[in-house]
Length: 70
Image (cartoon, rainbow, N blue to C red; front, side, top):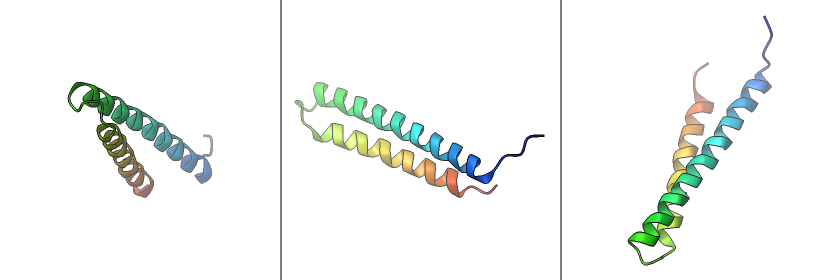
């Protein structure tokens, strides 16, 4: 059976966190952009707010993943 080092497990968790952050940031950016175009007369705040929500959710998921019991 192959041995897995703690550094490799930590690296994989960080990689998952970064991937999750990129996806959630992009989703928030897209949803904010669509809402901005359709409902808010092309204002910037829905885009910023959607992106911030996406990063916040990704941060929360990452924090839970890194602090999970092994």
